[in-house]
Amino acid sequence: MNQNDFPQDVSRRDSIKKLGLGSAAGLLGLFGGISGAEAKERDQDKFTYAKGVAPIKIKSVRAIGTAPQGPNLVVVRVDTTEPGLYGLGCATFTQRAEVVVTAIDRYLNDLCVGKDVDNIEDTWHSVYTSSYWRNGPVLNNALSGLDQALWDIKGKRAGLPLYQLLGGKVRFAVPCYGHGDGKTPEELADNVAKFMSQGFRHVRVQQGLYGATSLAKNPDFKDAGFANSKDAFMDQVTYMKSVPKMFDVVRKRCGEEVELLHDIHERLDPMDSIHLIKSVEDYRPFFIEDPFSPENPKWFQMLRQNTTVPIAMGELFNNQNEWKEAMVNQWFDYIRVHVSQIGGITPAMKLARLGEWFNIKTAWHGPPDVSPVGHSAHAHMDLALWNFGIQESVRFNDALLEVFPGSPTIKNGYMYVNEAPGIGVDINEKAAAKFPISNRAGNWQVRKRDGTLIRP
Ligand code: MG
Image (cartoon, rainbow, N blue to C red):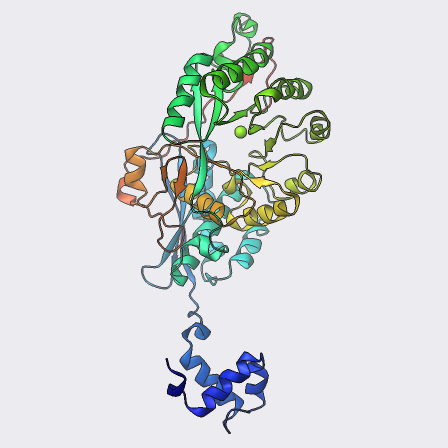
């Protein structure tokens, strides 16, 4: 628009605005004889952004359970008073999925109907404290699904992908790691090489399942008829000896260009864990994950004084307050938050921002028991966070992709989200219904030779 297109009083107003005097001048009625109120009304007509968006309310909150790839997944759907406008969020607590469904359908819906969809922070705190007792995984997962769904709706209302609402991109895509495993170090090295040929620069290396349970022999507790015959047996010495050997074989075969990660999965006694981490220092791990169970945080002080290996921790933490002391004391380098476990995007972003002050990076927990809605939420945050570290990724099978159109994609080791407003992932409920969730609890019991239960 040419300067001459403006009437004289608008040109004067423009000059005043450039001087930073716009609102004060409006109040004083300085615009060519019109009142401040008139000027304000005219501004709102001219600039649509000043009008905001009409308030809308939550109409219903419900759970959708589905298991297209095996693990139980739970998604929250929030419908609004605007026809056709809804949001989705991941509320997956795979081991107790049906209890989360009950929490959503029987409690969250009543709590949330009629609330303003825009007030995410207020809704989060209101739901968080609504049961008085809080921080359990069931209610936190339900809350996370709600929180993500409200962010999804906010993005749709703004016409922007979620990462834009979080500050915009600081990287073009999200570097990921894949899961390498093998019965032998050589088989694992082949697997790592395959990931590298697909463009991955980061691979997690595990030999013989967590804690090398498939390598353990002679479980005395089973011979004695103690405990459940299906419980796993882990020999801690066998595992500790296997890890440096595994790193050595993979480094020799795959070279220095690939970053290697490893997960102890909280299965060693604390001193053994410190010993194991020191034993792989020369192989320069990208990080070692979950050295201690969440009941043993003070061991991190000793670990940090004894090694320079970067440490990742926290998928088992429930509450954002569990992170505070560990982060301000810089006990680890990577935040392994299970985003649905701590209550969604709102608390996860607060933790990530806290981490920025201490140069602690994010590595959101992204296993198969997170829905594509949750994986996409991770990727949106990853795109917007300066202190992003790495993203755990999994392969989605065809059934999962049919249930969740718009799922993130992976190319050359990078995760991409689509540019649709909000989180960008939808759900095909008809397809989802073909894969009902189950109440099978699974067997997570791992025992030492004498039958002592290992606490992850
Ligand atoms: Mg882990």
